[in-house]
Image (cartoon, rainbow, N blue to C red; front, top):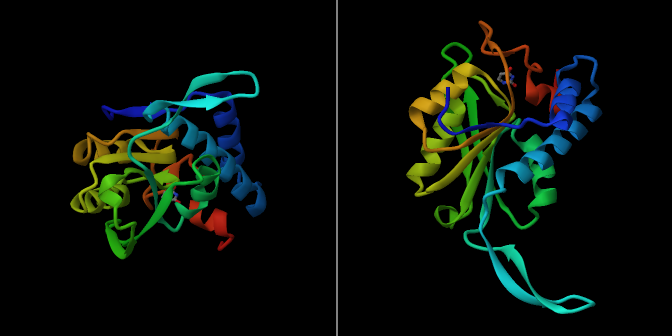
Length: 210
Ligand code: URA
């Protein structure tokens, strides 16, 4: 389906996703659980970061101990729903820079249209993690990844809460080099482009707009 796919297989992840899926979950709980899941995803997606040894002194002895080394991080939110994942991720990655890509789906064609793009100037020197809760058609994610590659980014990952097979196929076709981390892979898209069973419109549920 995708050559570089991680579906997080953890009971806490599945439990928290069930809370998000439930139509009875209130806006405040939905936000809180997205934040918790995003922190877990930050943990998973950074497991291959390089470390180097530094010399420190503990209360007991001097020792060599590992710290994160190499390129700095940048999180990119695909607006607006991606913003809901930022707080949880920066709890674990407080030094990460943040960029925003604004894309909306043309309701008729489902194609992405860019209306906003603001990223750190040195984005091409960073590990970039793109976040969007829902990988549906994959068109927005694919457009955001292409835009970042055009800006010289060579280290890219994509993180979502839920993925549809259709979106994974789009990313496999257009960006097979970009690893994808997801909380679950759902069944399919409905005729409106919603993930089934999914959790509805992630932006509306995060921001209470519907
Ligand atoms: N975007 C959402 O918020 N939900 C879906 O199911 C698909 C795209």
